[in-house]
Length: 207
Image (cartoon, rainbow, N blue to C red; front, side):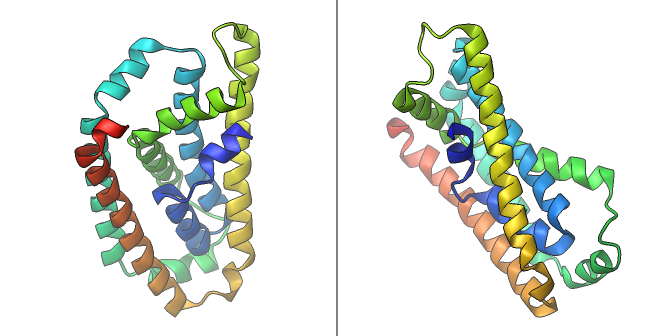
């Protein structure tokens, strides 16, 4: 449940997951989400085992990390907004079962990087672990390991569910819808990037 709850808030990766699913099918959207699931797992690992050096590094550099992540989101959103996805969408409809391993790795790296660059991710796991009482200083390492395994499973379940639901309606979406979805996706990702930059610059003392 912790992994599921940490993954399900709608953010830049969720928007990209929806876009990829609509354009390329279930597996492309799902694999986009998997990168975010591993980003969540990384922060859950840091929080669960109290790896203070790594945790302190990300917390103390959260402004720089947030700004870099925000700039990357702005660039990614701008790139998505300016593209014409209809030609690619038609080609994907003809070859729905084929996809480039290089593009899959690129999608994985993008979603992983966007998750890691969000300074609230590590704090959210601290809140979830504390509120649930799942981990304390006295929790045995083996029990903590099983909990962290559950975190990544929960995150993967969320991304599979999201891609599955979106894929159900995929066949009802035409070229005009694809164009608008691409524009909206680009704007949303840019807005998320802007919000991250504003948050770390003006509300850093509250993080």
